[in-house]
Image (cartoon, rainbow, N blue to C red; front, side, top):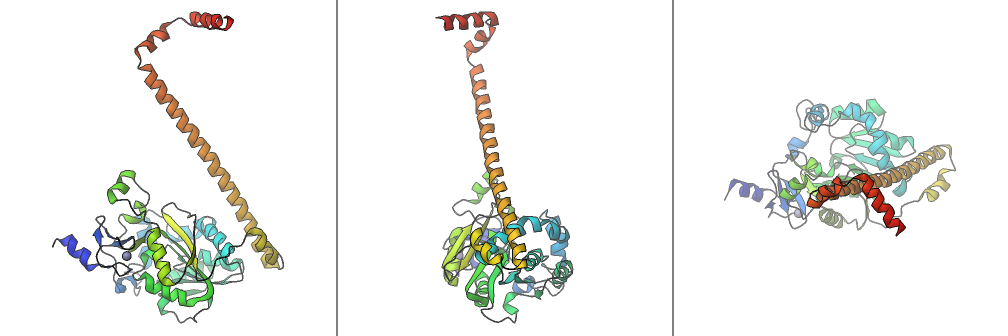
Length: 357
Ligand SMILES: [Zn+2]
């Protein structure tokens, strides 16, 4: 047995499947459910943060790893940059599916900006992180309540949350089913899970992705130590079926290599703006929330308009390129050069003659 085949035999998919095929230098593929499984990954001990200076998800992950290896801004810069960008995108979903007042837990909340945004709009929101340093950073930066350690270890009452948010978290989980089962037990009967995670474009080989320079490679190549499971849409459907969350809606993700979904045990009933407006207009804090909703809706209209105009520009650009290519082809005809030698006065005279006839 080759070394690669030996590794493939050791690793198991979250779904329990042990027979995994080779996919790329860093990942194996579970064809039973459509998940990419990291060949290396981390152990349970390596995921935990007991020493912020040395452990994988300790202080250096937020200050060094994200900037040096992923080319992302560090946590301090993101505490500002994320608020008007991804946090607003996530807020729109929360308002549609669980308007305030609602009790929310954000697992893996990083700097805590989204928790703060939710709290400012009337949500009872709490964040959770693995690193004591990040927990302290969020408390100091946004003055938000924070929990420290895995969600499985928290002493929280069952069925006490209206929503649990896991943005960019599920792909990091060693045992996604176990963690999501704990989240499920913490949710009320009509509670929702809101999840953003990478979306493996199943059906394409690694060579296909490389040839097309697919943007999914951004979350895949060189990140197999932290991204342990990369779910396809089919795998996500199976995960939530097993979890007992048959109601789900896949929403437009902020980034094209992600999937973004809301899942629940009970039918989802998203609110439109007008449905939100009536209860929100009955209190001062509700009116402030309503102003945010109106602002978000306007932003959405602007974004749609911008996207439509950009499409027109791209279409016109394509037509110009096609026209230029056709002209280049035309100039290769032997008669084309001879035609261009005909004096201009003669062409005008011929055109007039044609009109007169
Ligand atoms: Zn699987």
